[in-house]
Length: 160
Image (tube, rainbow, N blue to C red):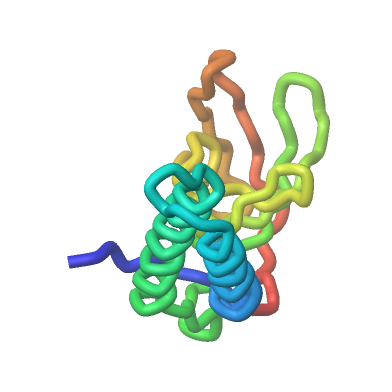
């Protein structure tokens, strides 16, 4: 059975848009390439035809995998999450105990992580160390560079 993954409505919509693009733009384009290559003569020695057929196989595999992901995707109902603890979709303001720097992260599903936009995967070391914690708690998190101690300053919920 395929793995269930959780998405925000925006993340799931992006997957659906990607799938739509593959099936309505990419697939017809490759079909045209195959038809053009076929028109050039002997298929047994036609490199363009072989390349187009290979591209078609790769595209169909990609479409199939994406259809499976979309079919097994689940939306998370943010309204049912506990606001007093850090959970997925929590936006967390943290103060680094060593240097006083304040950072803000939103914990999101792994496939929607984007550290440049402050979206931290729930499977990352920092997020794992924060999950279930409350405002005012101090947590020591082991990251590849060593241990970091954070004080949880604020927890808010992303509007999903």
